Length: 327
Picture 1 (cartoon, rainbow, N blue to C red):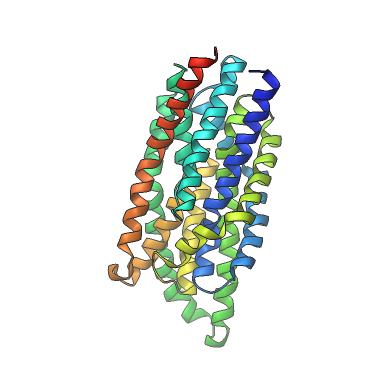
Picture 2: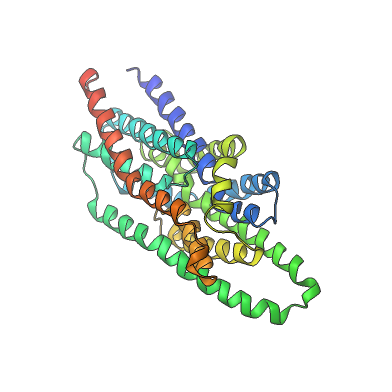
């Protein structure tokens, strides 16, 4: 395949992954605010677009390096091979995320791209950093658990303090303000962590610099938010448990703090898992009976399947390409 055509296809698939991230993960930021009736869907989407892009621009490079060079060292492979690997990994990740978005399931684009990169690496016998993968998997387990604990603690703390500190007549507008502010913080940390899922392989294969790639990925994510982001927002906002504004505030704050810590260490974690874990933790304060276990079961099954299905799809796709193209 012509070298420049190959680069064009890699960029196209990177943009497609970015679009799918915006479509599936927009809900992680302000879905809870929509579910608690603090914001309309339109207002939430505008704020997610702004703060998601800012997070990608200012701190997206941390995780981009891990995706592009930490799992499979794309920068050390033959140029042609690294481009094919980037193309196939992006395709596999994108295909699974789009399918899950159609089902209105908030899955992890981080899990999808990590599984896809590893699967493509195995298909061409590229060196894989299993230690990095192990660390990522461990963090994946603790992401929803840590967020649930933080959500529970934040709700307890805010519930006990806000009603004592703030006069009753000012309580509602103050809570609404902080719900919106914490949601913007979630959008920022989401953009910072998840833009790497779209452009980590683009940066790693040398098609773009790290800064150029996060701008490119940020714009693709914005497009996904604006065109299809509403679908999963409905699931996050109202189908796990019914949220009061103070519950939305606690869940968003817990999720944002959780994801931001991982981002600073360059670890690609799931903002979907984080916000869902936080909502579950907040819901537990009111009792286990308020949780929708049917939708939670479906989510968990999709979560478990994501890295393996995207990895298998990536492996098979690259294996088929090798039958027709010398890599």
